[in-house]
Image 1 (cartoon, helix red, strand yellow):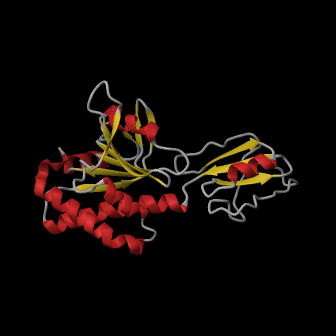
Image 2 (cartoon, one colour):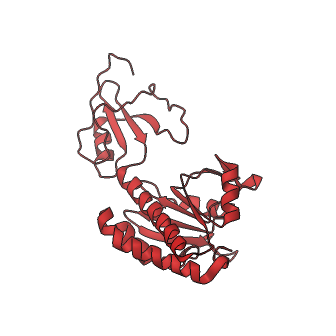
Image 3 (cartoon, helix red, strand yellow):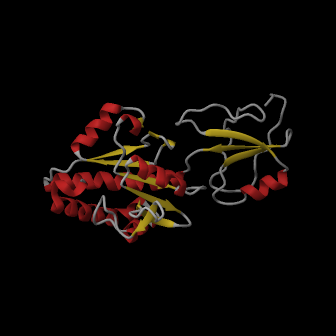
Length: 259
């Protein structure tokens, strides 16, 4: 953009639209290079009426329209709704850790937000990752940065994906090929789901499950309730109950729970 160009920001009122003063700086028609922690930005030429139709909904990405150039600018970045649901999973895992400590169990679990995974299928970054077992946790800590399963680095036992605009279904089979044992997904339209690898060669590579195998005691219905509650204060009783139930099941099953 040149300094002479004037910007007309989108006027449709949605939670995900850009705030005043947001910095859009890519050159026309280019997508700037970005690391995994930098929001991806892109410009697309389109009529204003098409832009308004595409973005007149609650899940519209951060965006604005340049009247002078006839180009729409979009920024792909996590939203508050996305981050708050990811935080639910993270806090649940941490509460399970505390409950395990209270029980004096030898099982150790480690939460890893934004774990970067690399395999023959490409690079992936689940919203949450959970490692179970002292040896696996130590190996992941030694690896640091990207965990490359081709080099023998461990994959998480469990990953969580919070879907905003595109489903995570295409990531599930690659995750399971890496050695991930289970995946949880949540979306506004689809709710919570627990995914496990398909057990038969002729079957689809992923199956839905009613209950977690990695964290016994966590059911799809319990996750649906937990992710669906509107605030942290509303979630706390359900989260405490679920964390104690999972910790109790892991403790009861002993060190073989993560085998």
